[in-house]
Image (cartoon, rainbow, N blue to C red; front, top):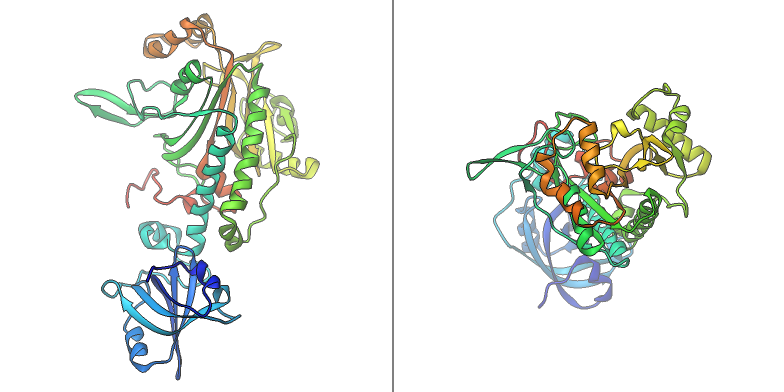
Length: 428
């Protein structure tokens, strides 16, 4: 008899079926025992009245893996309206050692460090696994949105020869006796691939050795990167980003509706046109000094409140960041060269996306590096490509874990990361 998932039980009422999963909870009453079995799709209630089966169930601690064969019987109070009766229960392994917290409770009450120390079992809790299902659905939406626009998915190196891409600290490693570094982003490579496919994207890990110890930073995270050619300016990039987010959220609703319901989430709508303010106007709205070179988290929170109150939007573009705070490859605003054709997208008051138009002329790269007092040598393989013809182009990058954290209302990005890597954590 083929195993079925708990979600299939409503279509099998009256039949003998086989399920398998983990012992989620046991309730041992005087005349009956209830065994709750958890599988990837949800929970199944098993009603045990036979004394021999009851004795077997009594000896099975929570999280033991079992197989149950029984009759699918309608019961409106059971999960999905179906329970198993007249069961036989067979362990598929030895009795489990219970984890240091109760997974059957609605809320996982263990502290976050305890959860992360025991991630392999903490992630089994429905609220923790729901966030990962939402993450998977968001990535599926990201790919679907870009595939529909004829983007090509690429895979770029994560070990690189230069440490000078963005000024952030990097992780150094030994590459057969030569120094090498974990990639801070696929930025250079995705730009070069515009010269091949015009439109590219990548889903992959990036590494930042910055000594952050905050609720919004990780040393390794998943970056959703996009680059597209033949743009007029950064506004073309912003339009693609807007449409991509809309499809991502639609796929979260479609693919992870159960997870959304588990967490009780109101999914945000993406406005047809996301409101946008220039950096100078953003400083005014956030009550920041007019000579402030960047937006602090407190400024972003004020801007998020303003976008919600003024425009009814969870999203806000801030455009025209000062060139001094942008990477050297950023294209300046032709009308205001001190400001960039770049943008950040704030989501519920937190920076989610950085993007913009890039330089595309070789001589502009030489001038930009010279203006910053940086040698061309470390960038030679990258800059040289622009001698061979590159179109006006731009792109953006979404931090997946930060997006999911804001979406589910997590206080800490580690709550939505399966096995986070940060300043203090390298295991499990």
